[in-house]
Length: 173
Image 1 (tube, rainbow, N blue to C red):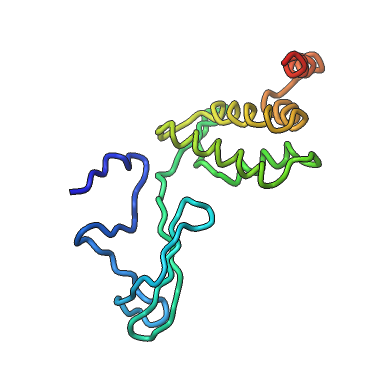
Image 2: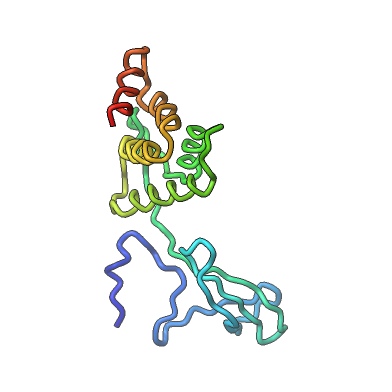
C-alpha cells in the first residue's frame, strides 16, 4: 500500500493509486466517464495540467491536479491571528521594490523561496516576525534600497539614528 506519511502538511485531493480512481465529471454534460488525453506539469511546476475528453459528448476540457495546503495562521505583533496570504507577502515586497530595477520575475522567485521556507517549517502557526526576517534577508540580497525601505516600516524606525544604524549594517558588509 502507499505511504502517506510524507503528506503531513498537505492533503491530496485527487488520487489515482492502484484501484482507487476518482472520476472527473464532464463540465458540459456531467458524464462521469472522461479520459485523460494529455498530462504534463503546469507552468508553475507545482501542479499537473490534464486535458480530458468526454466519452459521451466528445468535448474537451482542462483540469489541474495540485497539492492543497492546510491553512497557515500568522501571529501578528499584537497577538492577533490571521490566515497566511501570499498576496500580502507579495504586495509588501513589491512596495519595497517600487521604482527600483528589480524585475517582476526576481520578486516572484524571492516570494516563492520565502513561501517554500515558511511551509517547510511544518508549523500550523508562525509569528509574523519570522516571515519579516525572511523578507529582509531576501531583500538584502535583491536590492539594498528595497531592503532599507522594508526595514524602515518593518522595524518601525522611530528616529534618524535607528535608520542610520541599519544603513551602517549594509555599508559594513
